[in-house]
Amino acid sequence: MADAPPGAWRHLDVESPRGAYPIHVGPGLVRFGRALAEAVRGRHVLVVTDANVARLHLPVLQASLARHRPALAVGVHVMAPGEAEKTLDAWREVIDALARLGATRDATVVALGGGVVGDLAGFAAACWMRGIDVVQVPTTLLAMVDSSVGGKTAVDLPAGKNLVGAFHPPCAVVADTACLATLPERELRAGLAEVVKYGAVFDAAFLDWLEAHADALLARDPDALGDAVLRSCAYKAQVVARDPFERGERALLNFGHTFGHAIETEQGYAGAAGGLVHGEAVAVGMVRAARLSAALGRAPSADADRLEHLLARFGLPTAVPGGLDAGALLARMRLDKKADAAGLRFILWDGLGRGAIVRDVPEVAVLEVLRA
Image (tube, rainbow, N blue to C red; front, side, top):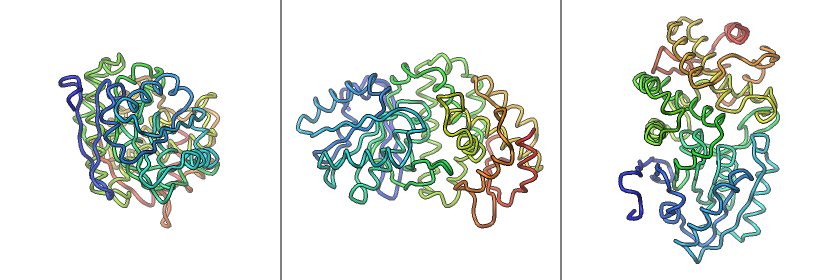
């Protein structure tokens, strides 16, 4: 791309059942716009975003599309922000917006926002005319390093998180790290939880790097953030290419999520009203998973201590919130997507950088870890 700032943009390719797609990482990608415009095949584009992101980034994205692809018919659907909006009703509203646009089989949905927008818009794209293109334009750190990559799309139900969805890989991911400058501090820290996850399950040396660069990441140093995003995407791209439908090792990416999703669901997805947001719940879940691994004799307690210390250094919670009943959380876990006919399945570890898929975990051990 000739209009890219020299040396500032990087990309890697992800293999998927629908063909390889690029992940572009760097500052100013939305403003320059070429990577986004080149990903659009047809003449219809529906931009899905939320009210907070629309105010900050929608005009720039619209101007870029108009400059590079003036003949496009562009519609916009703005939803309310927050995990509580990731529902079938909100999904139906995106479907209705595609119908009003007259979107054809070669239309493209552009998901401009965080993980909620990406999941919801991606699921709508998966369902419209049995599947149209989606371009993920993540604006949060968490979405850049996790939810925008790999094609897992879903909505929540009162019974549990992400229970209705589809695997629908994007045709491109455009991760504009300049968007992180407007990210609230809490959301930045929540995203760092997912970055830590990659080191926890794949590469202990990456945890060393995170410890060494913790201050730079919290200060939003552009080089440190760019490196963290690209390295995290590379870890995910490798495992997604080998296991696109999560039938094996891709489940390792859910380290901490069984505990975390149970907490989110039990709190009614109330991150904006005193509960934990997704990344915070995952941070708590990773520490609980590490403690459970130690209790089962799989890993040293010292490794759990080190993980807890790193997450705390990033300002993340590490203990189960008060007022949540361990039995109720366990009941939520039984409905988690990672459970199967044999019972509870957890993503644990055998120590730093060595994730493990463990079946038939004794419920009494889970309860003890939740109550600790």
